[in-house]
Image: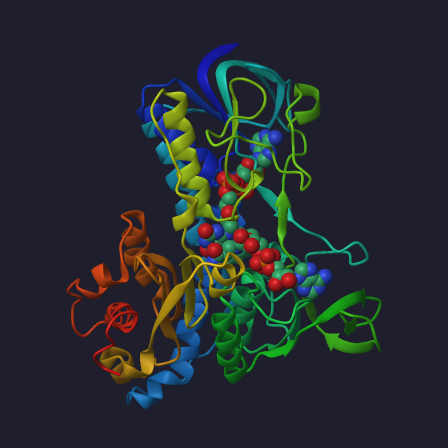
Length: 466
Ligand code: FAD
Ligand code: NAI
């Protein structure tokens, strides 16, 4: 029986970061993790392995096409086993990094399923051996999320896969069908298309990336089509027949109508994620959840039971690693008596395809729905010197600013390195920047980031290079 100030259940980016900050603030801290390695979805089967494959497959494609235009002659060959090993080694390095952080900050790691027995009590049930009980002043639930399944489609992680299976396919499928044109579908679809798959995306709604700005979705779809992806929008998959050598995928218009059958070697189900609360004992502990099964918290991450907090994918908000991390820091600070806070109006989101799609703040659709008057400053990469010389001109920067005050309300970028460029405007938004503040900030030349400045100029008196 150990007495802690904080016990964190789950060691994803929410949980391990909360634990580190709690320990830094002098709190005696432990984590409980049921998986063999620390780091949660993000490090083991999410952000990190997907980015390793995106990086490697992008270079493979570039070597096959783009290099020749620059006078570099190479004929790349694919050793998929080695590419998967490159990804696995990257994951291994990252999860070991979390082990190191636990040791460095003197955080106890308890292996097993953590269940809340009530205020201040966590039971840890290891895979083998007897359960133990931890006593603690505070508990942080950081149990993350799991994939959403379709009721009539069984995921075997071999031919009908979730993102986890799609990160480790032993060979390149000739035909890959993605159910869901969201972030996972487009990132992992890009990986396998670059490696040689014919990729068809079946999306229920009338556009891909439905939470992004509409103009971004439409232009991005055109770019991905040019790259060779096929889209079946307003469509749903009603079943997958896996009895034969080739999968027979039945699809129908979303609104109902004639069914048709497509063939595939692999089907990836990527229709969203749901909060994961199995085994936590929420009901027994009297912890409330909402209609979507998310743990309910107030704006201090407190559940309805005193001393029990929740953060990350298991609570409301975007299911993103950096959102989970920031909530982890804020929750630890609040427990330590400080004023932890997360600004939900300035959480960036990035789709790590080529080109990248990055956004922060409001979309045009959301501003219209709320009746907010805004102006638009837009600048295409075709007019950016660096993008032109690099021949990476697909995309644009779009800044939405308040019509009266000029305050930046939202920024949307399609372009190479959009994920890096979004940080400067996120910082600007944190400081309540006006578009003019960005326009008057000196940006280095020649960089892609000059397109951000030009879009800000376009929201005012006009861009220079257009
Ligand atoms: P998780 O990372 O899900 O961690 C939860 C942990 O809790 C797990 O280790 C689990 O084993 C453990 N756990 C659960 N219940 C218990 C219990 N009862 N006892 C003990 N342990 C328990 N986000 C980004 O921001 N950028 C990206 O590029 C990105 N890429 C992604 C790619 C893929 C393929 C996927 C699937 C997700 C991606 N995400 C990305 C989302 C990101 O992974 C999540 O938002 C993030 O991992 C959430 O962190 P978390 O700490 O809330 O939960
Ligand atoms: P998603 O919510 O991004 O996209 C799911 C898509 O599936 C939506 O477009 C939706 O309209 C569609 N859909 C839903 N039901 C359908 C059906 N029956 N048939 C066809 N289409 C259907 O979810 P996704 O891609 O599974 O990713 C889950 C979450 O993981 C993301 O929302 C994000 O939070 C996180 N993630 C983040 C990444 C990043 O930050 N780069 C990368 C990968 C995942």
